[in-house]
Image (cartoon, rainbow, N blue to C red; front, side):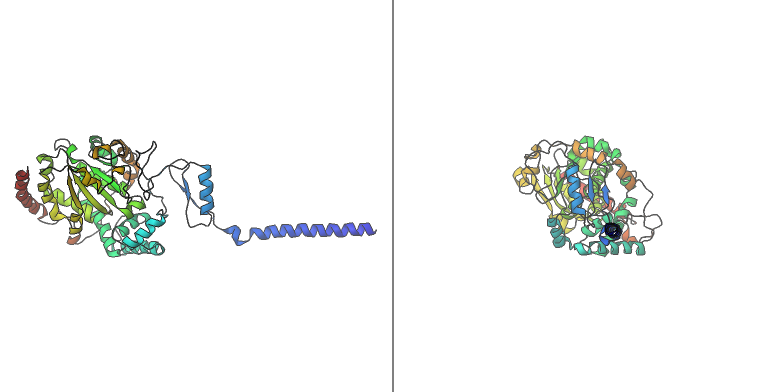
Length: 414
């Protein structure tokens, strides 16, 4: 009897403990720590390229697991010093940004953006929202992207000045309406002949300041090859691709223009009217920082070419033009040999035009979505002061008069 009572007590105790464990288990399911949001994963088109967004406390652990289980696509480290060896096989330029903004800047670039661009990480998204509110209030009919990634380009290009960033955004869209020959049906497949000719490329290695180098070779183009506007289309698409990584938005780019083979026909073909449009786009209508323009192998006629361009350049931009002639040592003082190809006295291998061509052509669908859409300014009323250069009454006639005065300078220099 005593044994029976003892077994009954033990059974009840065991049942009570089991019930407590089950209750504790149910209680744990309701604990806040189990309800922490799981990190979203950023999916890109490259195989096994997953990155968790940084607003989750699990970011570091997930990133570590992903790095151990997969081989992520190789990207350029824009903040690291360039290597002396040629690019390794499988080298690729940075891909497009994620659909939802996630800061990719290194701590060094965050500090640089704070110092040079007045960008404060803690206020970054607040500033983006302020610009977004300005667009919705002042230009509600403007059909433009309003995502964080896109608007940040304009804020950084104008050092987080809301009004200037808004002006730049409107100029960005106004330029498309003003120059349909360039912006209509703008996609990489339409400028393949320009790329095949070798008119431009982007050197694979950035300079020690993290700036990509856009290499232009205007002497490759002849007036009877194709319209000059196709060259502008190629430059614009290249700039659009270059500005995608945040590192470029902070560091800017460098232009290297090789004028070998440029004669009177190339120099006189654009004229002041087109020159003014090109300068207006680069200076006032595109969210990129051009930190230096290096001119090499310029002929005597370049004085006439620069006489056409200089009146339209802002003083700060004009000061960034450096003429090297055929002195490669002068060029190397501005761009180190470690990032230059053999053709310019560098050690980065032969000048490869195909890598950048493939990068652009592989982005065909991306640009179709971006540019092959209805006019973003349809229904938007802008004051005359907002009109792109050449749209205002009498603009083209005045440019023709200017060109007649400068043509004599070209012949004299030639």
